[in-house]
Length: 113
Image (tube, rainbow, N blue to C red):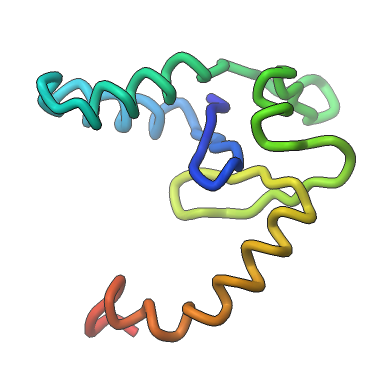
């Protein structure tokens, strides 16, 4: 499944992981506006795509426009999903985030790293 991600990238989920996310959102309170808003954008933009015989995947035009994918892109592993970024946008994001990366480890992974 390919869908909109944060910071104008695309998320690519294996089917089982997308089901897990779907189940988690299904159990979230529909009375919470943030849950409704997030679910609407995530599911309305989701597209079930398959690889062709050469292992390529077509990205729907509405998702290419959202992520600014014109020519060069970057595919990164992000734990249980892949992310597809416009190459220039990824470079800019990575430059900014490198500054905070070492500081984030204590907040994100306390006692792990």
